[in-house]
Structures are given as structure tokens and as C-alpha cells.
Length: 406
View 1 (cartoon, rainbow, N blue to C red):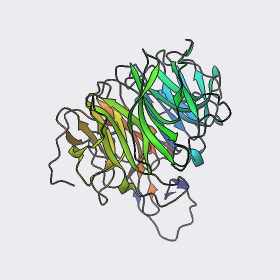
View 2: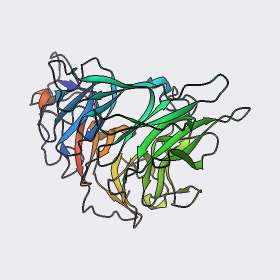
View 3: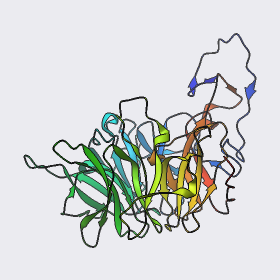
View 4: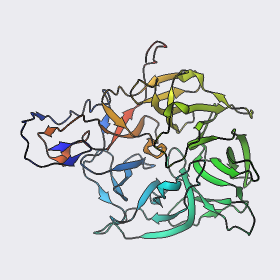
């Protein structure tokens, strides 16, 4: 018997619960056309499709697993106790893996992210415990991002501090597991809490937390880093008391980011209604709220498509609506619903959202929202919605939502 969050319970039940059939592949709970890519128990996250589009890697209970896209079983790429938090593909289909960050300091405005270590895993390496050919690459890393269609990976490492000097960071670019990393010597002032790479691979876009000093508190900035020039430039500085969730995204319609009132990461009263989608149009230094999604829209996480023309948005039409995946067409500023969620819990962590390299699908992580015990007439390893699992959502030829829909 599977109950609540997917734990296997005992067999001593006074009330007989009729078994629920395993969900059909045609509609796993997020609408027609959505396809589960993983099955069985375990906490899954950080899905990433390989540059070839043939494999998917993800974090499972703290280690990195990999599988052919539509295969049911996966293989470990690291040891079970590795402590992985995030993985990205390299150009040779090796992996760059960031260890799990301390959740108490994972990017809030009041607490900077705790540095982690970045490891390289060579392509097709395997062993009985999945730990072969794993090598430590970069220390003191706070953020990692990749080109949307896969391959090049950028990481930000904390630069050595001089006494009395404010925190600064340094950018490192990796392309293959056996290729030397490119280290950019000009430092980035502040702590980088989120990082992405533009679709053309020419620049990084960063959320940077800076300590103003004196009586003024920390403030967030959006910065870009031009790889050809080796320097960072500020795009916009946010008002004091606001923060950026996840990584800003470079699109053909400007830089987009999710922002809202900063809260203590340890507090339980974070109000999701305070977070909105903003953009800074190309050539402008003034942020503006994206109105195409609706004034009541509650944004959670975003990701730019490989061609830079669309933005995947996880959020809700309003506070009373379920969480869904939407696609914002940046040319027409129209919003299209990609899922039809009625009873699924969709993960809203920015790392749990990824595009396929061809731009035809978006991968997200979700599970069924169970109100009580349920009995399934299938083995646990064959179930998807009973646990957090990966889902492939088609995002081409989507119907445009009417303004009156919620």
C-alpha cells in the first residue's frame, strides 16, 4: 500500500481500499500527450536531456542516474552516497555535477549560497557503484548553468578574499570532461546565486547578491558576462528587500527573471503571491512586469528555449489555480498552457525544469497529490504519479489560452 508521500505502509487495514490501476501512459495526470520518463520511488530532480537528445540524467536520492530517454530503468553515474544536487551535460556527453548545497544558505537574500564542489564524470563511465572516473574539478562553487541545447557549462567559484574586501566570484567555462577549463580572471563583485547561459553561448546571465555596506542591506543585481570580453556588466539593480529566484534567462525579448519580496530562507511563511515575472528589454536598463501572462499570475520558475524565442514558465494563473507549465511566446507575448494539471504536485525549483535540445519538449518533475491511502494493482517500480518522477511535456502547436480562462 502506498500512502501520502509514497511510503510503503503495512498491510493491517480495517477498511478495504479498492486498487487503483496504474496510470495510462496517454494521460499520467498532467494532460494528454504528457509522458512519464521515470518510474518508481525515490526523490528525483534536476532533469537534463543530453545534447544528442537520446538520454536523460537526473538526481535520484542524492546520486546521479542516467537512462536512455524512453527506457524504464536507469543506471547510476555516481556512488549512492555522492550527495549530488545538480548535474549538467558537457559537449562530449560527460557530466558536470555540483554537490548538494546547504539548504540553510541556498540563495536567499539574507543568506548567500553555501559553496559546493564541482565534479567531472567522463562519458559512458560505469562501475558496480557508479563511482568510476569521477574527478573533482572546481572548489567553492555557488552556481552552475549550461547552454540551453546542452554542452558548454559555466560555473561560478568564490574568489579568494583579501582582508576587508567584499565577496567576489570568478567564472569558469567547461566544454568537455577531458578538456581544460577556461578561467576568466576578472572577478564578479558579489555572490552569484543563479546562473544561465544565453542560447547562442556568448554570455552568461547571473543573479548576484551584493552587500552594499554601511546601513544599507544586501541588494540583488542582474548581470551579464561576455565571454569574448571577459567581464561582467550590470543590467539592473533591484530595490532593497527583493530577491531573484533561480537564474535570469537571456531571450530574444530581453533578460527575464522571477523576483519578489525577500524572506528568511528558514521561515515557513514565504508568500508565493509576491513573486512575479519581469524582463529588461534589450537596450534598456529598466525592468518591466511581463503583462502577457496576466496580472494575477504567480510565477515560480522559468527556462529559455534553445532558440531563445520561448520561455517555459511554471506557475499558477492565480492563487486558486493549480500549478501548470506554460510557454510564453516572446514574439507575440502570448501564453500557452502545456499541461492540464488537476491533481498533481509540480516541483517549482528552477533546477527541476529543462528543455529538450530540439525545443519540442520540456521536462518537469511531479507526483500525484494523494489525500489518503491508495492501493495500486501494480509493482511500485512501475508507477509514476505515486512518486516524484520526470515527465516529458510536448510544447509545439499549443492552443493559445483565452483571456477569460483561469
